[in-house]
Image (cartoon, rainbow, N blue to C red; front, side):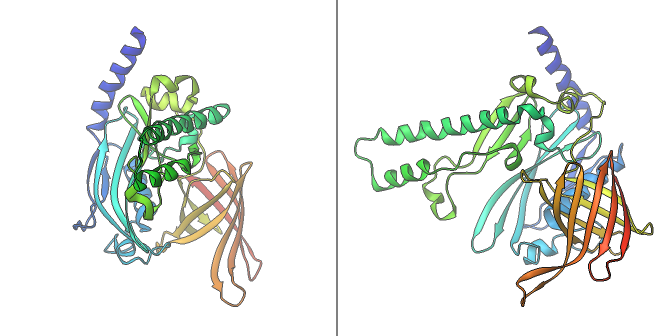
Length: 356
């Protein structure tokens, strides 16, 4: 017990000193609908650059230095999913030494407006985004998924029992009962949001209602908390070092990482591989460092091998995407080595990337 107390006191002290060195301000131009975090970390410019590049490419589809207004695509719905996206605020959360967790609040508007809160978590030793699946031993994934689902089920179940205990339920109450009885609760690590706190990890699962039924949903999103101590026996070596404040680094998955390298040995590019899904599929975005114009990739990552398609255009006649290139590559340590093949000419070019 005494060791645990000393451990968390140590984390708290380290966290304070480290976090004082990391500052967050507003990305320019700041407006009422464009309040977006930009990180300053003078002691480690490489980490600072990686975090800011990730945030801006991931959230704004903007490559830093590619234009005067980072919010252009988001504010004009000319992004890849054709939604207007507004950012209203951000918050830096108190965490252990090695971790930066940022909460981002905003609104996305497609057919209708929808408020959102998202959390982005970074390893301050490397600047890498922290994938939840990297935090746990592989044999513990099923257990952790079960713990999350059980707590969501209890939260919904307790509220359902309360609703069903009413003697003369109103029509609204009956609609609520139907809503919660049909609630999706099978969330897994791969499809859930999360953020770190001073001594706990919080998973955030989506609410039971769709937009049309939101007024009936008194529970809203499910915030499920676990103390670090509760999760101790499930942590991976990476997570233990990350949370304890150790500088020891462990190998992590390539998802949500930035890579830099060259095509054909002479065309410098940067790649952001997005999260890898449970079915091994993923999307990515890359740009030539010279023109900084994002290009999309889609593919699969199986047994350290990438099979990727770079689409050229969508054929209305064929009702399908026509490829521009096919990429086959292997993950070797912190490098990605393979080929980029022109779909029309069938010419092969080398592809060599290294984790930033």
